[in-house]
Image (cartoon, rainbow, N blue to C red; front, top):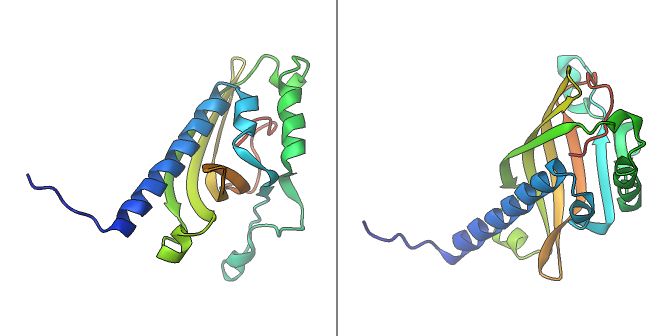
Length: 183
């Protein structure tokens, strides 16, 4: 079997994709293990963590099925708010998480939105991915939350960090009793 030589730009792209996947898979493990302090360290200080609402619209209006940046949202947090939310879960008095839910994050379809050479030279990278978050609480409560994410990743001291996250659920009516998990 002969070795295939890839152009340097392709190797750079593949290395970056692997680095991004490693970040997202680490993030999923940290969330599933409720290691929130380590999870929060994956974000930049100027983070926006945003989950707009989905709307049911007629076919001709399907481009506007997600609420806008300054409109109502399921979640619209900065890093300070995420720190408070995560801290609240660790108090033992958060009624919706006593006892703790069992959560599993599955991340897939990770790709750079723009894989051009110019984009690879930048400091910020826009990344698209899909997720499935499974949650089980007590004996009978089970939730499957499925959707996609758009992240802006930024290099901070040579490490990738999440600067923006847009979470789009594939449902317009939330069937879960709460949103105490993270995406």
